[in-house]
Length: 235
Image 1 (cartoon, rainbow, N blue to C red):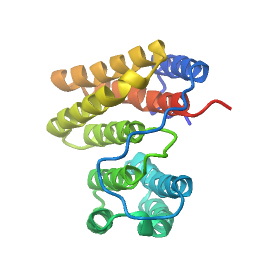
Image 2: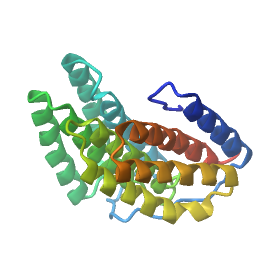
Image 3: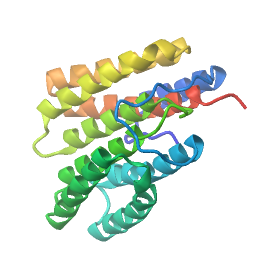
């Protein structure tokens, strides 16, 4: 799904172009193993499907943290936790412990109606779950981590006051992650578009321009979807 958070023709055009490029240049490469150790578990393909299904609920919670009502967010959290509980056995002990810490932070954020804290804790939970995938993942873990970086950047941009320092760290993480995976992106138009999106995020932070930051991160998140399609095996 292409995620565009603002009705901007330029953003939409880049997303559509990137999607077309990705569709013409699919890859069947396997991902590098995630840095965090993972626990012994069922078959790899089933494992990753379950982890991504669990992560999706927290992605949704992050995306909607600033817009939905408290009851709607509570309902989303209940659904996300159900999926996460089903995937918990796939996590290493340190990952499971981190999930528990973040669960407490999410509860506190909901209780205090702190939308920024909710979005950040939810996207950190997303990171734990996607990082637990193993080397059989069709789409490299780095692609999910670029999603994570974009959502963190967006949440910090929507905070009041805007958290520019954290946004600087978020785009630095995205840049480092992109450096690990960019050599594997064979669609030059897609690669160039992603470079431009990251540059836009960096410039927006340097200028402390919240509007530009929103446009740039919308580009980045849309292009992550194109990267996902790029790495999926051809039918």
